[in-house]
Length: 155
Image (cartoon, rainbow, N blue to C red):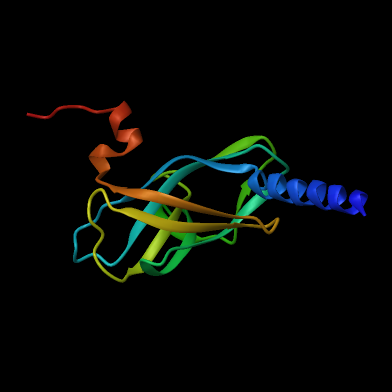
């Protein structure tokens, strides 16, 4: 009988370590754009690192809004237009960057205005069945990571 107890402990420990390291996808940085209270939509920008096999980001959801959709910007007839896309590829051992000038997560139908500094929970779902629960801070465009790199003072 002792062998079964040992086997049970090994299986239990294996299960714990497998769940702790299940996700090969990690949030490097990200934020949600602060908007005036009268605007019911905003966007999330972030960088994900994939330390495993190739997959795709297929959806996002957040309890603070009616809907979150994957969007990209395309140029058509000299105009930049936003388009819904089904997925963003996340090749193996690579990064996916969602930014204001391209791919992003559109957050629509905010249930209440977001406050600067507020932490917003979001769940990202991937084609391989993984989900990643993250928190993104609401920041003004001036406080966003890209803006800090190219910050100019205007007088």
